[in-house]
Length: 506
Image (cartoon, rainbow, N blue to C red; front, side, top):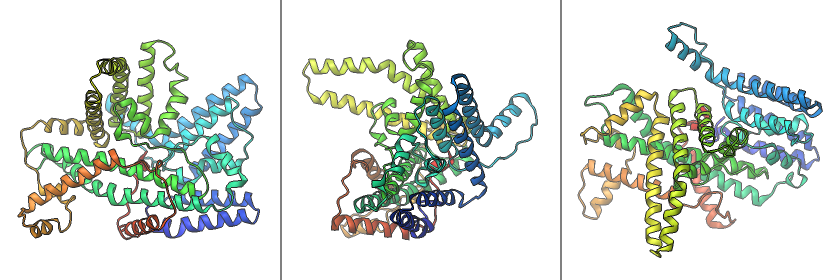
């Protein structure tokens, strides 16, 4: 089920909230938790009931591992930890990477092993990583004596189930047990509704608008590599920038909606998105983008590998391993692997040059050159980082590494034509008539170019200067009520074509 669907907004969410709080009001908190778990599983299996068998088996097996570890001696506990990690990694490998692995074996060695065309279960990377963190924490003795119902609800709670954030048991299960959170809180309900509506508008009104242009651009790139029908350099730049904004508003929108729904249930879901396009370096970007994935990779891979405690060379190797895992986590394609490697190299470069930047900043301050030069340096850092992110997003979205390299080559072809087809997706209705009213004559092509520029500039302005939804104050007043109601109505009316969130693929 999708957040941006009629059945979710008009039926699923209201009845889930009503009966959850009703059961709690009647003193049936265990029934309330069981009901919420059942609704979460319905949410997950809505499109494909076969998904339910996978997540239910995964939950049961991991819970058994954690319970056995609580009673086992040190050696047996270590064996159980290894078996638990192997089980979870094996689950992801089979459903997500088996065909990719076999197809590469066939290509490398000329074999003809049959591909199974295995269907990828929704959110398997998210709920599996979440359970790996629980298994590791159980081994360390950091998990409490949670009941099976509490554990299952922690894994399957529907707002964060299929696209994150990757929540820790210590962040969510104690909230399910907190008696003060079992009654409706109208401040949380209003805040949650406002966050949900703003996230929904990001997805439907902004991300999907850019997504239409991206889909068109890559469909053309798949058909035409060279020649007159191939994308021109300017069209590639438009499509690349469009995808940069699409994935930003798509993922940001989902994160806002997940957090908003959690607030409606009086549950605080951890922050997962903190204005990442404001980043001044690759390292800063990963502190802001998919923050809970960065936390997982740091806590459960980077630090156990030794982190930065075993010398510079080992530190860089550990960073590359972490980003290789990040690339693989995102998908079974060489584009994701290369994307992870490039970001790893960017992180290593940032670590190498960090001391140089500090010296420059300190030198500017000592020379008392004022804030102007410091600001210029930050703008340069931001520009380099933003270009790096744009180019690597192009790789992330490409169907293959070859398609990515072909698009990069065409960026340097001296061919400046821009077709109206890609610009049509950014047409602002009636804008030409507005110019005519003020006495400015514009051709249709000039109108399209102007509309595209305005929409791109507006999107850039939003990501750089609009306050983060986590930082906003959600006051219960008439203006917020009107804006929220208006946005919600516009979004519901605009939901004719329902599109899945991009991170559902991972």
